[in-house]
Image (cartoon, rainbow, N blue to C red; front, side):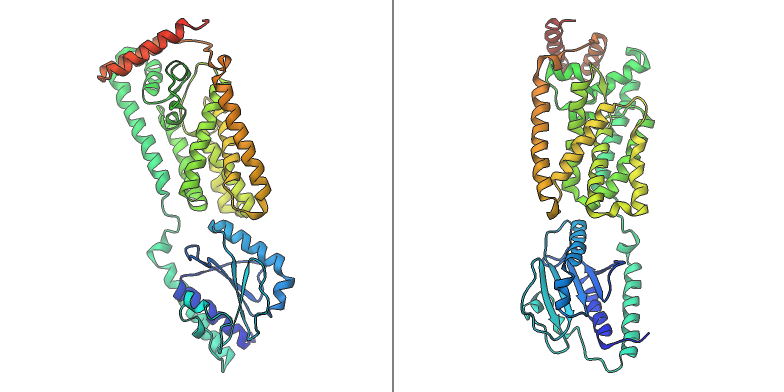
Length: 419
């Protein structure tokens, strides 16, 4: 391979950013005569392009360059300009929109202020006497640097356990263990199925009678963490872990939790409006919201086309099991879809984001109005035996005040019911 002086200087510059500034190579199949580097934690320039071409090529190649930059900054969840450094001694006459053009040579850096951001940048590129010999040296140094990083503790576990997801899974596990204990404690109150249903309600499961009669709308959220069947718990936790591993890393904890909880509420609202006096539990509505969010993110950044991510993405589908609420799944998917589009940062999606925000507000208003209408609050069936069992459990747990409150509210509700 015949190497030029600029080939070596390009690698010298890359070595400086990787070794001194904690950047990493970004592999691009279509990149030629250029190197892309990324450091999502850098406050000013998380994305850098290094090139040995003349500045004039940027004008003709701007669309491609900005498309790549857009994809990377979406992945990093950062809104930033691209730092485009060229191995050249040309003077920078005009800057391009969204691109900070800089030239560098062994003698000069066209923007001296950049050395304040990257100390030592002015010495990163050195004159080359023997290009082939220097090329071999710099490639060996880069290979050694990459090897050291690959052996570091951080590199050995690139996908750290998703902390927020692990906490959510811990809550679900604790509630399941409580359900096992309570089912054993109250086993003499009735059959195993009746006791399990009553325990689920006791622990925060969705029960329309209590939502309507006692205004316990908090059950729309808490029901997601209630599982009284071991198989149901295992399937949902497996799906939650796989989606959490992806979504926490790609979307950030804040957006991940907003989408998850928003989807759970949407799913519960759909159950409230589309089902009768049922008991519902499980986090599958939130899982389908994450499914929709990952679809949106995958389309936006095109990472969905990576086989490894597609495999993890498909694992969420195992939560579609017989006996679980399809209304919660559909509602969660709709909620996750709307919320995730609103949370995107893709500039080309600005109009879509505005339209989706309007759609989200309309959907929330519509669901809210439908929820307070008398026909939506009617109970198709009542289960006084279940109510009495829950109240008895509460009194056995010395929560008489709550049990008396529920008894009073349900009597008032049933007296006014047409049933």
